[in-house]
Image (cartoon, rainbow, N blue to C red):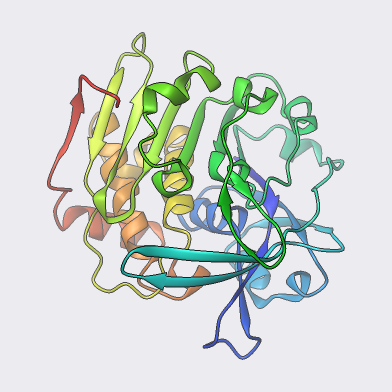
Amino acid sequence: EVLHVGSASRDLAADDPRGWRLGGGVAYAALTTARLGLGTAAVIGADPLAATAAELDLLRRYGVQLRVVPLAESPVFRNVEAAAGRSQTCLAPGHRLPVVDLPAAWLASTAWSLVPVAGELGDEWATAVPQGVFLALGWQGWLRNLVAGRLVARRSPERSELLARADLVGVSRHDLAPGARIADLRPFLRPDAGLLVTDGERGGRLVRPAGDTAGGTWRYAAHPADAEVDPTGAGDTFLGTLVALSVRPALAGGGKPSVGRDLAFAAAAASLVIEGPGLLGVPDRAAVVTRSRRGEPGWLEPSGTDD
């Protein structure tokens, strides 16, 4: 039902015997849709160490069909969490992930999710995505300048064939320049695409085109987590949940589907993933349903502005 594409990363972790744990938006998004009950496949670029990661067996255990593409180098990061936010150093920028031959069943997936961590997906992937499928992009993977041994720096948005194809684009506010306005991002997207901007514990917003039946800007608050163990992957889990709901709207519960209900459900999933280390925090549907029933975000409403 869903195909995810991107490279795995290795994030240094002092509490892991290997000294690192597997990350990358593709791993979080694939595990999210699989644990929500969708038939999930993933194309994952990995260097020799990442290709042996136990986390890939975790994905397989929950039903993710994997195609691991060998790379000489995949991204490696050192993340330092502080009160002012995350400081991220690139230790290895990784290599591009080439287009590979895929099984016919994967090509026929209802939704595709391209979630690079280091800009490893080029526009050649735009021609690989079949016409008519729902296409979601994790934009932040293209908004980072990566140089080995240096802090990760922001990169200005650029037009691309992939952005011109996408139905839904997700990005973290932290990967945008300070003061960036959502209205300034819209020209990079096709007119009828949805734009999700996550902002951690401050919630975020989903901007839908005016011609949509639920058009406008929907603001949501974050669900409070019981504990913050590892904030990595929250945005990828949020986006992955919305992709799952695009395929199976009933996952969020009974009643008439709505933008507000979907955002509340995705916010619940994102709050759960940060309560565990790495991919071990990705929740199943039962946990998300329970969290979402604990109380919806404090504010969740359409707004007339998208600044």
